[in-house]
Image (cartoon, rainbow, N blue to C red; front, side, top):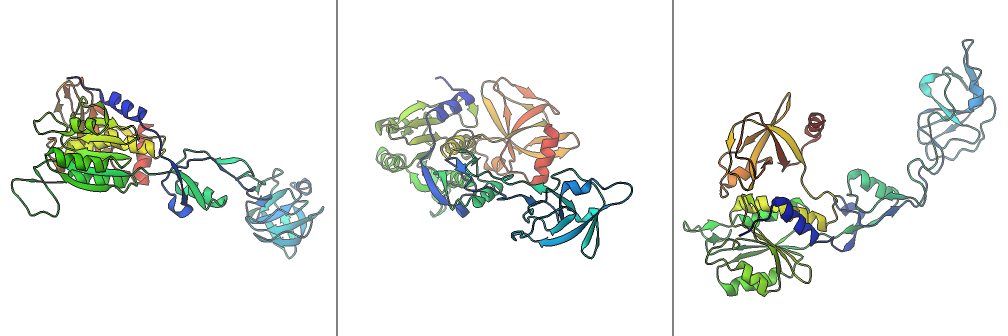
Length: 419
């Protein structure tokens, strides 16, 4: 039985999927979405030359007299506030008091900030010579009428949303979020609302996968549990194939009661692969239908299911939503302890992260069994151990895939560490 390498499986998945259709959402609902079409400026901004400082609008020619002998003295003829259109032209020997953001009056070509002046009634003394054009924001500095201000594919951040508001984009064209169905399979599973049965296992997979989808901005539909009989599995799979993506956990190993693969094929799913050289999670299936539904057959063990989601389903969902960067960020860290490993499969070790003066430190979250859910609950990252590795030593540099967003200070520290 052949196993695909992790990167081969990831490439196979992304090759078979495309972005979702374009939809229009209200500006105030666009944060975190991916813009699907180029956005154009519908005006110049600023619409005219404006002052970048509180100060005095002057003619540069009037500043040439500034010397060791004394400042340039100019008469103040106007007081211009932001939003007010100047009514007077600045002529030789004159100036206008001006506020930040106010239009620069005709005749003026330089703004002198208040700190570089002295005021005596309606005469301002300019103490410091400046270059022509100083402290003026020219027309169109921010946006030029008709130019592309945001290219398709950009993610809407607070800054991008501000640009959209500036060009009055009330409705934003974005890539739609895929519809996702989640199904757990197995006689051994116990639903959240069922009475406790010591002989059964609570269905954690459905809710873990639900949370992972929600973290991507997707609201999945839970199809519940399909018991290990062909009729029930067929009915649940048929329902799940109505969605853009079906995440089905359990039923993908080689046990006698694992009906998933033959049932999927009977329902028109082309299975592209069934095994990946990784742990936890080597029994992983991926297939597609003629109508474009993507099917992920995830392992039944909860840790395996979550790790496989991060490596395969999450990048697929992000690509469908138009994101250009589909994989989680990785950092380098130093391992805090020795570790033995088995050659042959890429190992995703759950780790916590800390810092010292030299950078990040990675520490195992404990027992790494595929059923030990606490190892995932405590994890801040997945340490990627190459398939060829058989052991790692304390202090060795390792690659860690981040599972949690960092705050600003942590991000800044990380950038300093990684150079």
